[in-house]
Every structure is written in C-alpha cells, then in structure tokens.
Length: 147
Ligand SMILES: [Zn+2]
Image 1: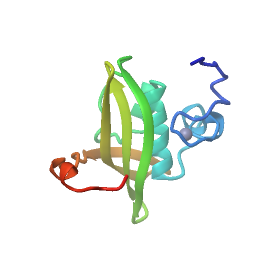
Image 2: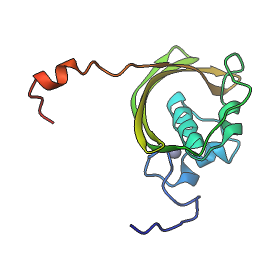
Image 3: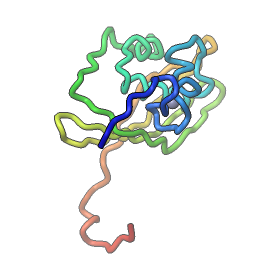
C-alpha cells in the first residue's frame, strides 16, 4: 500500500476524530488554547503520544502526579483510540474511560484505562489513570455470542 505524505496540519488528527489535525488536537498541541473539556484533553494527549510530544504531555499533567520525564520510544506504534465514557464530576473533575490500541515490537496491545482529570486555573489536567483489567476470557468459549 502506498503511503501519501500530507501536510501534518491538514491530515486527519491522530486522535482518530476525522477532523484535520489543525482543527482538532493541533489547536492544543501547537497553539495556546487549553482543551475545553477533559475528553478533548484526553484526545490531545493521545495525539501527543502518537506524535511523541513529551513537553505537551508533561505540561498537561497535574503537578502533583507529573513525572519528571517521559521516554516515548519508537518501539510503540499507536493504532487507535476509542473513548468509551466521559463523566463530569462537579465543576472541576471528570473521568474519561478509553481504549487505546498499540503495537510494541509487532505485538498488539490494548490499554483500557479510566483517567481522572481536574480543572484548575482555567485548564484541564490529567491526574491519574486506573487500568481496567481485561474481562475474564473464561466465558468467551462457552457462549455463542453474536459478533
Ligand atoms: Zn484530535
């Protein structure tokens, strides 16, 4: 399959929104705008992982939980993002549940996480995430689940 290189600003956003990058997460990654919602911040942070934008990731991490550095290795290839749930909790807190698919060294993985965000000083910050363990596979073989 032929890959056509396009201007990063006009290609679809890495967060999978079908909106050009410049009108989606590019507004946050390359501009000064803060994400309006926790889910917008979550998507932009996923895009930042795809684009290996460490500074953006650290800048949107809440100071209380922010790591000193990130190592965004080339070995991780991000494949897609699916936001499952967005829940506001009062004025300044939100939860976003998502599944991110990626490959490391050719092996497919799936990250299912519930992330916690807080709104502070006019901006949303990522606080922490809880990994949702994969559902037990015991039931898979038993039922004749329609796909
Ligand atoms: Zn986006």
